[in-house]
Image (cartoon, rainbow, N blue to C red):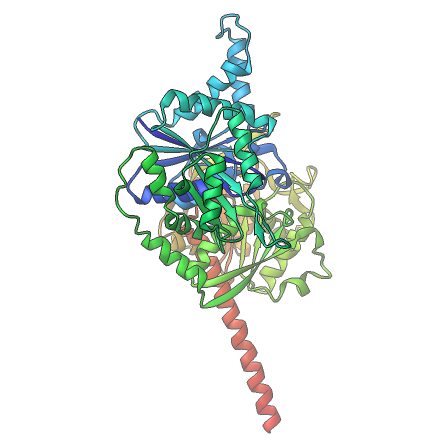
Length: 553
């Protein structure tokens, strides 16, 4: 039977439970264990698919088409293994299932209550991944903070499960905060004590404390925390602020978090984690040989989590190219025909991000026009690809009213239009074209050379598509549809061959980029940015040399 590790959080949100869970999973995986992670979110939305990115960051999409929490992206990037619908459960999904069961008469007329019916369903979902002997260890992250009203059913469910499974089959890792008061020059343990006390009042006691801190925890402080929180002193783990999230697994290795968990679960320690590829990646990340500046043109740039997977994919690609990627956030609403060239011409590359709705669309189109005309490497993802097609139709084909029916339903030149199977759909949640689909690449195209394959699979999240009525005109004018879905004929990739790098994808390649397998499109994009920078520097040198020669004459 699989063993269970529950990761809870206290004191404040955004401490990094997902990173700690993923780091622990990585270390256990490196010791030879089959590990997966699941996230339980306490909000009542069925999934984050309808949430504004400002509310909850990006919506991460799995192979099987589940719209999930962005932490699942961290799980995949660290473990290099895909997740699924079963890895993310919300309160909304729990209650929806229980209510449907009640309507179907499954409870035989009993009064349906939080305990036992809701907690029983939470326990069933927790145990689901443990069926079939697929995993040795299952890490379950509980969203929110201990003490939140919405988290109480999850804490109770874990309490029951821990009692049912026994101490050697289920443990709790509690992530907490040890704040440093600069005025007093002192680390304070009281918030952690209160967090653990609150959890204990609900019947759940932590086995291990992971303490986020700005300053190192000295021995006497660890002893005090252990004494007042009723854990062993070696189970108080220091989690110093790291320069990168990818350094956290090695910090947890140094603190022996994996060893302590295995000892408490009565499991063999296995092989000592070597983490050679991980260390090589970190070395390249921390000591780059060059730097490029990439403009991220988006609608939600105020919140970095809105484009989390894109930012991480750029980090992976930067390490491959031994290059630091500086992302310059540019709000598409602030771009106009008057200022776009000035704001964008010094960038090494331009990435136009995904999104929905009409806000900031003209700014995205203007950025794409600059990238195309000024030969700046360009990468458009989902809406970015669609707006690249609109821009090309307007300024190359001469269709001045070209647009997407998402923003302008009555446009006479609908270059982007709603997919046929989407037109009859009225429910918004979970009804887009979601998950993995096949794409066939044109032989001899740049994209086929980058993938080193003629047939690929990528993840999607959209309702609108390229209108194939314009396909021939686009191709004759120089924009190549180099990736096509073989079943529907849907255009998945467009590129301009007579350009240093101009690629748009209807799918989201950022979802599949991991530390050990950086996505080839991002790797090529960063490489193109480096080459563009070198060429611009070379041109500048030639100009300077020419001026010097004139002065000498």
